[in-house]
Length: 151
Image 1: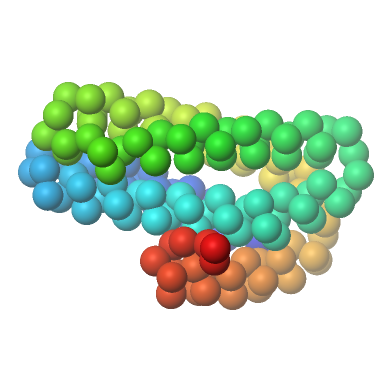
Image 2: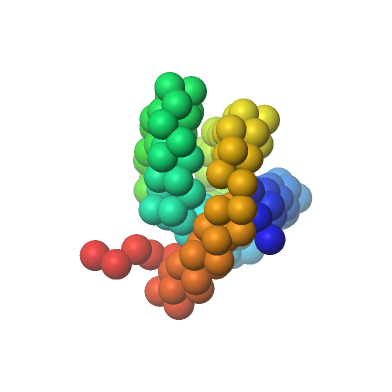
């Protein structure tokens, strides 16, 4: 599997979780789904930042540099929203509003990655398969830690 295919699969998984949150009214289930979204996003952004983005940046083009810089800023904004979610009661209207904003941020990020960055990443050729293997190994490590990076 190519790294871009792996990342697309993760994008679809998170999108599915957001849809489940929209359909769920039970506070406990909303909290569980929010926790799962947070974990999935932390794992995803970590492997992108540690493995995929450096490889794309390594192409050395101005376009690649700009896309990576923007993607890192988008990750930062997503992290800020994720940090606030646990402090909000899942039954509160603000929870739904924050989840909507988070879903929109992620959707925008995914759209740009898949329509622009992944096309540029194709220049990596066979390296995309090697990257995928490294990313899968890192994902397993992060899952064993509950999605958290080592301190």
